[in-house]
Image 1 (cartoon, helix red, strand yellow):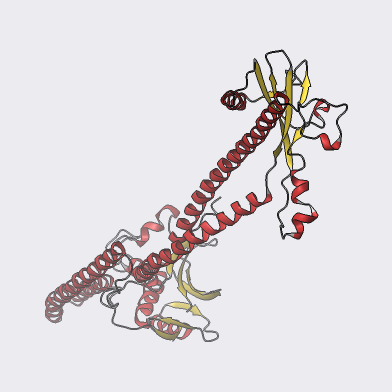
Image 2: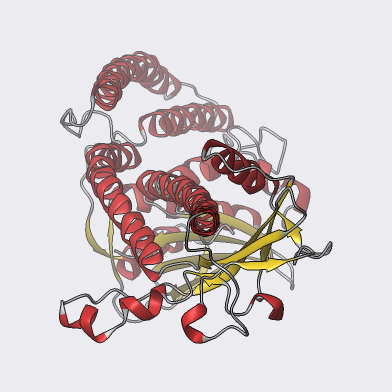
Amino acid sequence: MTRLWPNNLVGQLLLVVALIMLLAQGLNGFLLYRGMQTQNLIEASTAAVSRIAFGLEREASTRPLVERGPPRRRQRGHLKFTTETVISPDMNRLSELEVRAEQALTNMGFTFSEIEAVSVRQLPAAMEGYVVGANRGRWRNSSINRSMGSRRQPPQTRGFVILSIQRPNGQWVSIASAVRGRSPIFIRTLVFQTITIFLLLLIPLILFGRYISRPLKSLTVRAQSFQPGVNEALEERGPPDTRDLIRAFNDMSSRVSTMLDEKDVMLGAIGHDLRTPLAALRIRVENVEDDSERDRMIAGIEDMDQTLDDILSLARLGRSQEQSEPTDIRSLIETVVDEYKDMGHDISYQRGARQPAHIRATLIRRALRNLIGNAAKYGTSVDIIVDKSDDRLMIHVDDDGPGIAPDKIEAMFEPFVRAEESRNRATGGSGLGLTLARAIARDHGGDVMLENREGGGLRASLILPIR
């Protein structure tokens, strides 16, 4: 059922309207069909009443109508006079038609003691030759009628109405009238009417739906690619409600951009105000005579400076002034690996063929440094592998360290969360490396994943889309 349900506003609107119209047209067709059936029964009963009235009038005149032997072809439509009714108890009585016939005959001045009307599918043998309307189709299909240009197909007979009245003297007068069947014109007219209504309603709805959906689609695309301070205001189109929505989105975008600009100014001021005393403290520490104490103080200052740089980088992510450019990922990885090799770390990496990707090189380099730095910190050797799968590039950083408990892997991406709880710089750190690496990857449309290796150690995977 969900496969048949459209996933867009216009499709859902059209489907709902089409279903409602189909239901309404089906109900209309059913009512018309029932009305046509009732009308055919009334026509048949009217013909029967007229023939009985005509026959009784002739009988009362100087030329009485009597039965003259067995029925012949030319005797069709003659009245049947019997001492008992030709209607059996198992036949379908038509009480409404009996009332109509009673009123009609009474208005014409005829007296009778009882009247019966039934509807049958097959004409009883006793009524053969006493039928009104049986030759109507034959006349319409006659050579004279065809020569006059008539192409209408005669309606088929779907049953008979038998009308029988009992006269005051006890004699029964009966006549059968053919009931017309469903005309093919009715079906064609109903189908044509349905198609016409669908076209008259659905075509304007399609145009109106596109008039509504196009601005909404543009708004969706703009919201998905929203970058504060980068995109221009979206053009206000569509009906008033949609224009109000686009105007509200433009106002919100402007407010968000203004707030982020103010945040960047504030962060710049904080960074300047904090780095200035740190730089002054760094100069004063150089005058400390105790070498070990001086080294610890310098390490602490550098740790504070690195933490401050991570916090500012994380806060400013998404507002980088650097533009994405085609970059050789393998060459970028090799540059970072060489930095750590120069610091004495055991890192294995095979460069391989050139692999371009559309990235902001400075940010990706920062993410690689964080991942490789963590691997080198907790393990004795690091192995870097680059895999390509469809439109994704995966950079795996494997180490032989202790790994992370499975229930704590996702928590490692939270700010200031560390696998090692100590404040020791050699193993602790600020707890922002993985947070910043994942934020950079997601800003590029990728991600960072952690998983324990089967042979021991941890694998950190930087996943980037290839555009």
